[in-house]
Image (cartoon, rainbow, N blue to C red; front, side, top):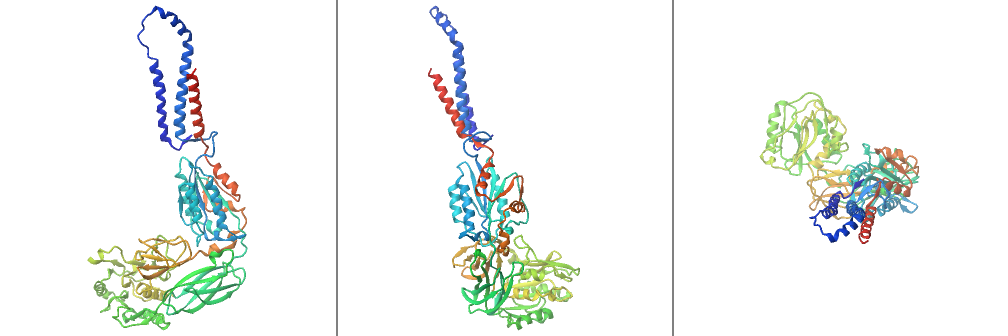
Length: 634
């Protein structure tokens, strides 16, 4: 037997009151002989056995009434006959991923999933505890009325979410409801990609019950890629798009809501989509919101894919000969393509590209290490004069591989820095040593380490500078021979040393860092969402969200769903494999799946460890009091 309010068991001490009264009545007084009452003594002796039995019965009834009331107040549950289901702590995992937005028989599938969750919540009592956990990590708790209101406000995500993380959190919430029986109740469309997690959730002794809705989606069209190249248009560029479709599909490409290109692609699979590159020019300037759209089908959330570009004149540079031939050739290529322009050194908008030991340098600069070790001292003096808080360390000639630090706990694999530096052999380097002056020591943040080599910073950036710990020569590193070197140089000049800001391609619900200089997020409808701190949780709906610093746009957050959510085969109608599907996500002693809504709800409440005994104990106390009153009145 368990108790929901064990503190009320202390009321059982009141059972001592009837016992104390009974003992006080047995106290014997002084005996005085009186001849006239000897006949009464004889009658009392004849009835003494009946009186003792009556008094003891009254004592037992009074004790029983007090103890039964104390037990009822403690709200016991046990595997005995009772009224209603035992109090339960149920965490409902509601799959609101992108694929749940599919329309089937004129109804959105998510509405069916939500309806099943509503039926379960409606059968809860005030003794139960319940939570709703969505695929994007949102938790709704409170009374059944609050849960129902929260369900009504939910909508499908623009991406996959993280069902494994939601399930892991649900297991913890259900356990927190002790001594109630913990249960995790999942309701999902069974999309295969949603049930693939980095690790299996160990539910241990917490029952996990899945209700899987079958979906028959034989055909689906989706835009799975829309990538601008370059990110900065001057004012032209290209967009590469990829489309998967079971038949031919017409597409439209828009910039700031205006259609600028159209076309048709042949049928293609998700593994080998149809790819098209469209070359465009924009009449707008600044940050531009773009999209690729298809005609609506059953799964409408993947019929549009978003992208963003910045339209502006090319960054201007001044190239010094000290930077070396390879760096000069890379910049010359970008100038010839119209992606960079040459400027006059000394202009505050012109980035000077050189080796660090060159004389007369002014910020902003992109600097490489000196080719001659003898110039190391002069290079460090130039860094100090420019106010750059880094110094070149002693030369190292052993070969190592460059690495790009993780961002927000996740490996960086998609940025120009990652493609250029990660895994690049470095044979000659000057490990960079952070050496802030008095002014820099008071700053709240440190400069950004773009890449490391041999465990020490190798490429760093800060306000007005990018500094490399090797000369840009094949003898020192393979970097100038790599095809990704030129795109990185352009990214460094346009974003880190220019005014392009950041372009982040993310998925709904993802957490991004480095938002300290962002004051607000501009939603697609133009409204603003205030941002504070270094971390930001990506909105749940797809679209382009501009990063704002006060009134200025300083970047873009491009939110799109994962292409795997568009897999029509992953939404197959076969429910026989539901247990195997669930086993890939959760392990435990009691893990099961069903396709029956009624059976799922019944199974959830059947896991409760017994019945509530509040009413039986109250009834027992009432019977004891009625019996005591009857016997006392005779």
